[in-house]
Image (tube, rainbow, N blue to C red):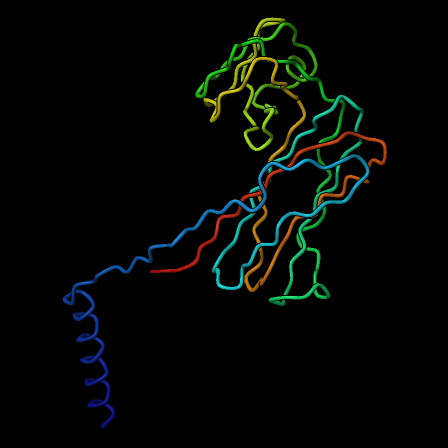
Length: 232
């Protein structure tokens, strides 16, 4: 009986191995449904104030990432602004917010502002002319963020500086999205970062603590989110 059991065990293993090779394998790939959304467009934050972004509803998402941009828009010395994310386990109400991911202190320094002399600076431009340079435009390593603060604030944008010609021009990596009028100011202290929210978050929002430096600079910030809402 022992020999028979061994025979049938070996036979079954052989059949299973053959089936693995004979039966065609069809790989299964999940297509993601990705939904980018504007949460809060460029918004000013006054000196020595605490602000909050719009609230993001995440309860039906598999994954949510926050895409944050900010820049100083004055030449006042600034020891930093504190940014942090609050998440809630509840669909509504304000008694269940919790900090997530730690606090980031950003936008440290004294910004230099230079007005654009192009009349106007066209959309898709990668260089603007200026009468003067200096500040981080010259002293910081290249591939750093600078801001174009449009007269219509929501048309502002960050660009990644790549080069300069002293007292002549400033260049960046990709073309501008918007056209900008003559004398539109550049600012040379800006930052961007991403926060990935934990699975199971129902709501989230960004807190901008500009009391970190009580007599520091004003600033502008913008936040988008990207949501994975389905696995097809």
